[in-house]
Length: 221
Ligand code: MD6
Ligand code: FE
Image (cartoon, rainbow, N blue to C red; front, top):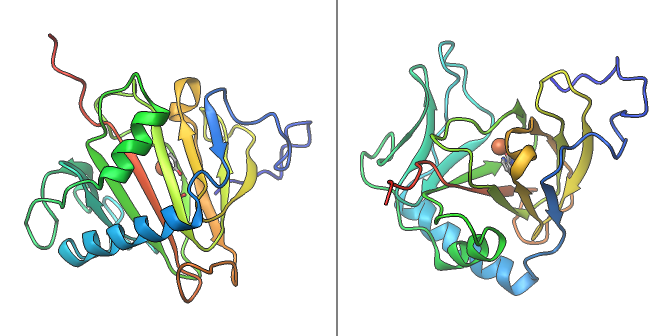
């Protein structure tokens, strides 16, 4: 995935021209204190809604990333496909509430958008990765997608609107925030690997990414 061997042009893997407009990285958007308090909130979410191992649609091949969610809706994946649902796939209980700090972050970055309904929690252990994908299981693509990274640095790859478009790589460190808005809302992206020895927040090179999404359009007034 993310093969760039054929891109001999200016838009190479390290080029600066690949990502569509509306892709923003906000380095260090959360300071250390905010990261620590968010981590405590994530621990409370995980205590109530334990991490599960998603499976690829059809094949059932397990993801290397473990996941859980908070908010009214959560993203799940199993042999039956990708979808949003209101309950934990193993426990069957509603997802925990979305922390206020995440709502505040969203409202600051996406003031035009209705509140997010889903916060996907991704936990990476060393060796885990997330293949090149689009976030496109939502019913509306009007709102941006906002993510927050905690713990070890992840090597993030961002491309264009077609899978074969050139990509570029950048590092997402603890406290960094990514926004996919406008034309970049449906850009391909993924995590190639976790960089060892880069976490002072989570032990054992752990990395957490929280992805905030609006799933449903607002009902017509
Ligand atoms: C990750 N992030 O950073 C994976 N999606 O672990 C995502 O898949 C992502 O960071 C949409 C918007 C921002 C993201
Ligand atoms: Fe994504």
